[in-house]
Image 1 (spheres, rainbow, N blue to C red):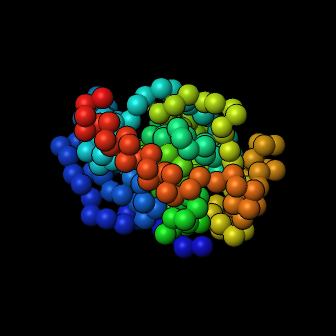
Image 2: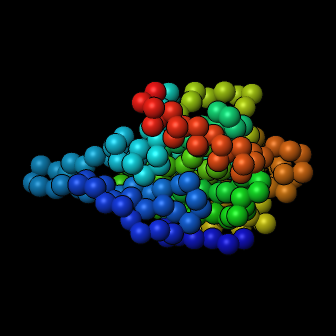
Length: 221
């Protein structure tokens, strides 16, 4: 499958954050500017106004999650049914992870493709993952702490997964770091199996959902 580690579009800049859309459409990476002096460092790790300008609608904050993972822990590929699915803003506050966004939207021009971004406590990037996209990461250091801002609460009956070791996806997990998966992730279907079973979101439904979010944002609702 086609892959990318870099953005697909020219970055949009604000006073405090650089924003670039990834090669998987409807996902963005946010790189905050850091201000360091003898006391330490200050940064704005999330800016609602910057995200809204990039995405076209605000992130409705419904839940905040944090995971702490030993090196090799592999979480994902996770997604939720559309609508309402679950958009996420993800950053690594301590340690280092390799974060992957996967286009699992049936009918998408980039279906089956992925983009990978290293998230760490040095550059302190964040990634926004729109509803309907798949998300996974592997911890590259012990004690890697990842924080997520989520647009909807966790709803077990609507949560889905694709096997992160699916060879057809070819996600770029590092050699020499044996992946540690949950029992649920280890038995998740491959992308082809999930598609055949009708478990994947459609690109058309996702685009309609994004358009509705932007329409409501334009009306100030």
